[in-house]
Length: 322
Image (cartoon, rainbow, N blue to C red; front, side, top):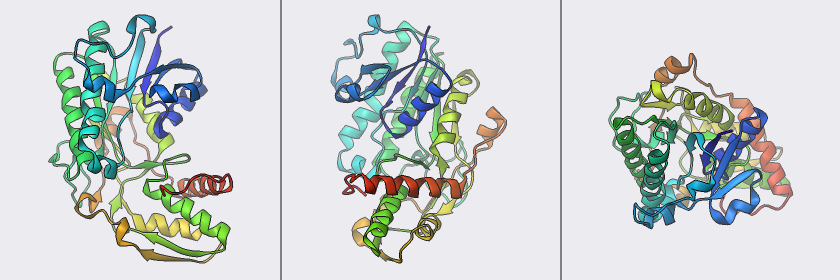
């Protein structure tokens, strides 16, 4: 039996997607960094996109002969933390553009009809105060967005050659287990630590930025639905269509904290011009494809984030990235 292949299967979204596939009894192959392969159960293969990017196009990035034929590929692997991309643009391009290009070309030589879902980002857009549709101007304001846009060009170029490659542009999403460098788990875990310590001050960056958040569970369910429809669309947004200021998320998390907390702006946490004022997606196309689009369950997400944060603090997790 064929398997759905997942790159980045050991990451935040990949972990949620693997859990969903197990629950649905759908076979899959996890493609992860070789050094992480031992930590993943089931069918696992090492794949280093940086190594792949540095190889000649004729060199195989995987031992395809030893692997089961894929029924589809969901490409999640990316350097996705914008400040990390700003610090190392060459690394970002290797992981987000060149490595995937090598993988796709070789896969499609062997399996030209393979459905591929290329996961991009809402960061490819020029930020606007109104919801961004797929026809909007594409002018990313940071290195992450620029490399994701280059990756889209690779994917759509293959589609132009007749392959079933579709691009999905997810906007922000969060949930249990997300890396502490991202804004909502960072707030939550530092609040949980203050709670354990009896109170204190929470240092924050910009709070007036508006973002379109979903729960990661809704995102992975949508990926699986879209993988079955790659012939029907070249690209679409994955978003709720509604924006909330980061301040609203913070206020909700602070309200869940059992001790008094003072919120204080810290200039070291401000990202400057690389931080979009407003990044909200238009989900009309997604709704046309699937009949409806996911919506954010605000309280459920914040409850989960605080519960997860308390557990992380209790087990002594390293909070230095928060």
